[in-house]
Amino acid sequence: MAGKILPVLKLATKVTIAGGALYVAYDSGLLGGSEQGSEVLGKAKAAIPPAVDEWGKYFGFELPAFPKIGFVPVEAWNSGVQSSISALSSGPTAVGDYTNQGLQYLKDLAK
Image (tube, rainbow, N blue to C red; front, top):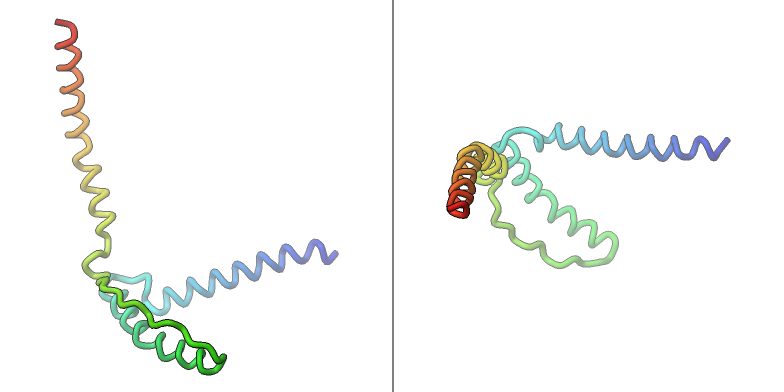
């Protein structure tokens, strides 16, 4: 009986943790727009180092300093999507050009 309940309990624990993480991300604004994400990132940068220092003192260990990250999410938000859509929009033209080049090559070979 316990062998059948344990996998269900494991799955329920994993789903609960994932759901909680998703709720916290949505509630804090991480899934919103770029401005809202930047605000949350700024809050996290301000809150995390003091908490890590406090935990380090409590547990008696010291962590190295955090690296400085010069990344602004507002400037890079959807840049991957924009480049992908740009490549897809220029795709038909590129295919037509390559087709014409291939046909010209075959015509040159036939001569």
